[in-house]
Length: 462
Image (cartoon, rainbow, N blue to C red; front, top):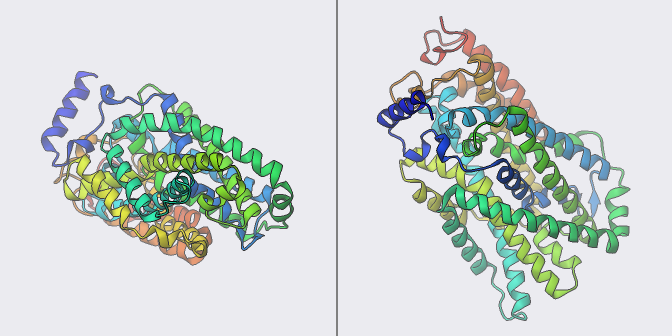
């Protein structure tokens, strides 16, 4: 690193009251290579929660969308996801700062408390949901290998959650290796399941899903929003991941590091989820998968496969961001924060959210929190690219009494305006909130709150 960068890092260490895990990540500490990054996002995309979203297009044995509508919705959402990832990861990549520090730029040091919880709470809930699905699968595995003498989902859920807490204590280094190993296993397993569904359940899938009339109206656009909203919590905190990536990678190449693995994994999993629901009528993939595989040995392998996908997904999407939020709010060390994150997920009542009757409710949960995250990501992008022209004083973000002290009313008001607009049509919540909040933030930053310290260094700084 250059002397200038070393000097700035030293300055931040002296002025910051935050835990060192939230300080800018130095070049020498970035260990994630492009290959690792691809495996990481592939591993995140291949998970049972995403299968559940794919299965949501088949309700009570009736498909609301056909195969063409479902896959086009998936491709559109993946294109938007990858684009926003590539745009929002740049500040974290160039400056090495995490998401919770990035938020200070638009919401203020105190205002960040509110906006960071909008990322942390959904992640913890998803952590619990994924773990409950994994616990269900682990229970299926143990039932098979013990000949039915063991059958206790609660014990499996708690045991799996404790294992994930232990893995997360080792930080991003452990995540990198878990994802690399898991991604290879995932794709082999998915290809096998896909083959079984096509050869053994082709007629049921064709009649229920492929040849369904479906809709090109609101259900089609609602699915785009659900699939997009599923990643809303992840790409809004893109800085948490890009700060770990080795330097020297162009913006276009980083964009490809998102688009390629997410298309392969997310698209494939959505299709398999819909196929499983069409074949079995069961929306919980952890229960549906054993139904389509009659060989007990292979069924045990598939159940174990689900457990691995759950661990891999949680390590990427549902551990690091909320842990950083807890570290920010409590000043605890990172290891203590990831432990608390795991314990909160344990107590999030996921067994209620993942019931057959809750499939529609789970989709609604995604839409509701994405109604807030759409505005947040829009505000961050308008701030960085339009209002600040990608010029950010990193040290200023760590000053408790600097220009970002307190609340930025423009950011908080714009977020609320965007969310309110989104709730007018919750099926399209994300895109409505995104557009309205971005416009509102620009206008408020330009015309309101004259003399605000948040205008310093922006195009409105006079």
